Image 1 (cartoon, rainbow, N blue to C red):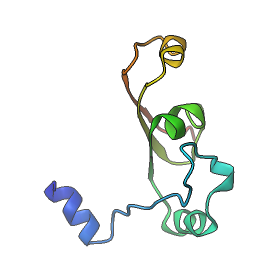
Image 2 (image 1 turned 30 degrees about the vertical axis):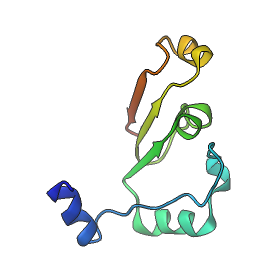
Image 3 (image 1 turned 90 degrees about the vertical axis):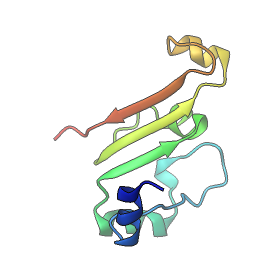
Image 4 (image 1 turned 180 degrees about the vertical axis):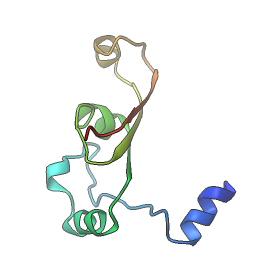
Length: 99
């Protein structure tokens, strides 16, 4: 593991938290209450959303109050064309909230 990430995990400066959802999509308005409380209490400064369903289908245009990174491989030809890319293109969408 990368030593910087390992150190951040060990020192509790980085948390890896599941959404509590088994769906391939993620409705941010219906997050697990424990996760929502944790994010608010810890003052999350980065949210990473991974997967085509979660990062593209349901949250591509979602604006968060902290920095976000949306990661996905486009596995649908129609969606790839709609986004102006090719099938199996990789998307890394980094956003900084507007003040």
